Amino acid sequence: MFKVRFFIISVFLFVACETPIKFSEAALKDVLETREGKTIEFRDVIEQYKGKKVFIDVWASWCKDCLKGMPKVKELQSENPEVEFLFLSLDTSISNWNNAIKKYNIKGEHFYITSGDDGAFKDFLNSNWIPRYMVLDEYGNISLFKATKITDKRIKEALQ
Image 1 (cartoon, rainbow, N blue to C red):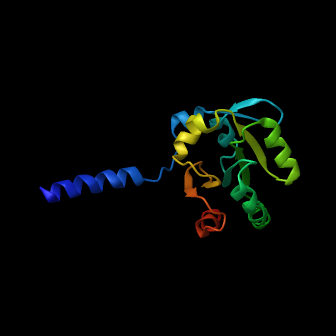
Image 2 (image 1 turned 180 degrees about the horizontal axis):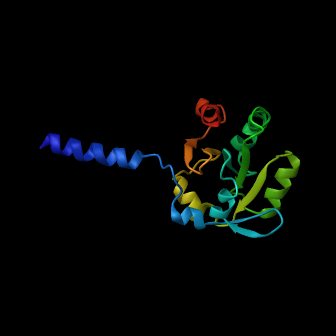
Image 3 (image 1 turned 135 degrees about the vertical axis):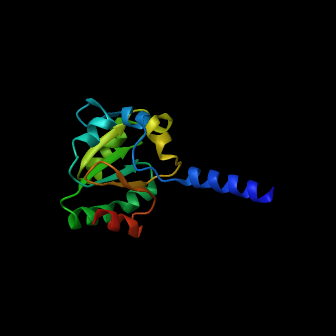
C-alpha cells in the first residue's frame, strides 16, 4: 500500500512541477495593449517574432525587484542584440507603466497586460512573484519558463 501511495504522489508531483514548453490557449488569447493604445492578443505578439529568440520580462513599475534588475536586463540586451526583448507590464495603470518606461529608459517592445493579476496569462505563469523572466526559442517554444532573478544563470544559457 505504501508503494502505491508513493507512486501516486510521485506522479502527481512530476505533473504539477512539469515545465511547459508551449503557452496555454487561454494565455495566447489574453489581450495586451500597445503603447499606442491598440489591443493585440498575446498570440499575435509572439507570432511576429518566430525565427528569433525572445526574452520576456514580466514586470511592473511598483515592483522594486523589477526595477533593481533593469540594469542587468540592459546588459543582456547589449550582449544579445539579436534577441527580441519583450516587456509585459502588470502595472496598476497605463500612465504608471508609460511613465516608468520613460523614467528608466527601458528599450524593447512594451505591452500592458490588460487583464492584470486576474488574467489567463498571469494564471499560466502560476506565480505570484515578479519579476518573471522567460525565454522563447526561434520556434516560439518556451526554453526557460521560470526565472525570478535576472542573475539566474539559466537565462544566459537559454539566450545562447
